[in-house]
Length: 334
Image 1 (cartoon, one colour):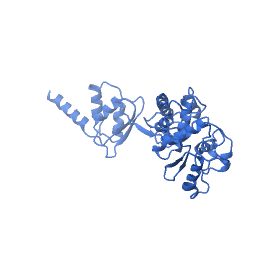
Image 2 (tube, one colour):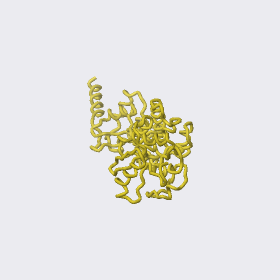
Image 3 (tube, helix red, strand yellow):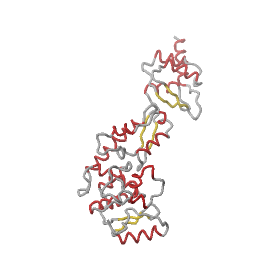
Image 4 (cartoon, rainbow, N blue to C red):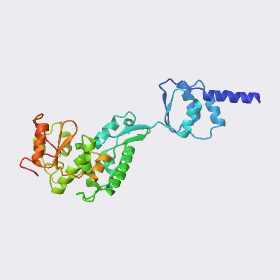
């Protein structure tokens, strides 16, 4: 009997002893189909423990559960017993990736490509993203993904994250549409999504989102063109090299809101919750114009004359090629 309890004490002491991990910790990869009996020699070869006998004995007589494959963190001070618990419970490493507001789908794909874990998997194709949003209005996936921080584990592909972001966007957009103001000049949630993407790109100071949304909503009600640079830039695609010219503004494209009436055909980015809610309930004032002050804020004006003075005061003195947004037309207000 004394020999038995001596063996139990020996086993417990080995199970509770810290693994040979330095303060930086260690990332352990457990392939699919692995067993605890296969893991033991791996731990020895990695230098994490001197012998796999304690693991084999513990699994043989105590553990009655499979091992979960995946990526695990072994922290400084972790014991063999704790590692076994992690493997049984599947406490795999959770990675995080943040998609900021106002970025395009391509910019999100670029972020994925730069992630050290996600980059190991193929990026979602354009066709896969279109298929993902096929039941939604529009002929583009742009705008249909909610900006947020998403968690994933090693082995997940980017499409799974886009699927989460799409489901979140539908939930947020549906809820906001249900709380919209009664007199919006928007036919459906998709038009609200398009306008929210423009508001997101135009906003430099978060507190102004509802005022910027109000300007665009009132212009739509009055039949005025939106005249906003971000839509033009989006329509230019790879042709835009950082300088928006008069020629660009005169070019007739589906996204040139200096030339077209109403909204562009699709969103121009993926807007966040605040931009969506600002469009659904814009500020109730009378401004029809705004111009950047140069510090992230804007000067709002009710009339074209006031707007031209604001452009002169805040921008023309500093930049010869400045364009306000919305801009005054060459031959008067549109």
